[in-house]
Length: 313
Image (tube, rainbow, N blue to C red; front, side, top):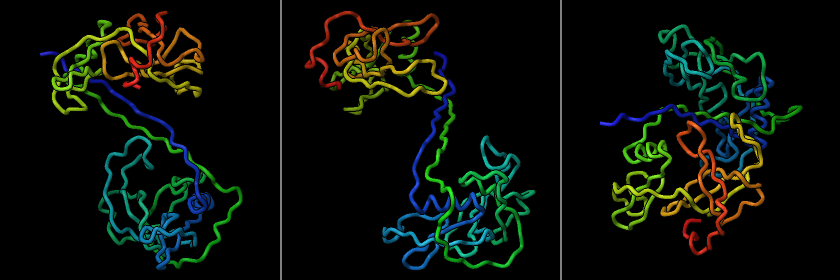
């Protein structure tokens, strides 16, 4: 029985978004140690605020300042904090209804143990020492006995308002390919490209998935394709990716390998980026010790006719 392939995989990217007037006021307020909510048409105060009423879908912008104290409505203990979580010691995830609000805010509570946490306990915001206009300006909540406060109107105007945020997204997991992709990866080690043919529609899919995406039936007939192929479409990349040692601009293309009925994607090299074109005939370039082609380069053949690859664009 062959060894089961597996490898760690990390998907990471920064997500950048602009803010509307309500979210801008909320995050700027946190920087200034002020918690803002928004009042809906029926008088409810939502914290965190939203820009449209979740019931009527009407635009709402009546800002209200609520207290930095509140009540825990529910909680769950986290005994082993993970990387980039708000605290590096055990803590409780809590929903806190701030005084003056009608909804609860999700955050963390700094407590010595689960026996110190209970639904209904009173808490207050512990502000971060350095604040930038983000939800992390609330470092955490901490136990605090106090009388409930009252909401007051707020114009939502601050000096130097926050107008955009960058949220890092990261997913770490271990990837284990199935039978079909394991065979594909093993063939690449031998500098061959193997797909699988559907027994119903007879199309050859590369990389194979073990089932035909069109017919939904299992595939097990292996077919060697390429190694040459045709550029069906492409894009010019002008932004340098983190940890990728490739100078911009460069071209990333969909390539229909000879004998395949599905285009795969790969980088095009060996030609100026502005000379890459649909129909360009290419071949793989392998580097020493690599398990997959580093890039594809022109073969020098005449361009393929559009009718040959138009179904794979």
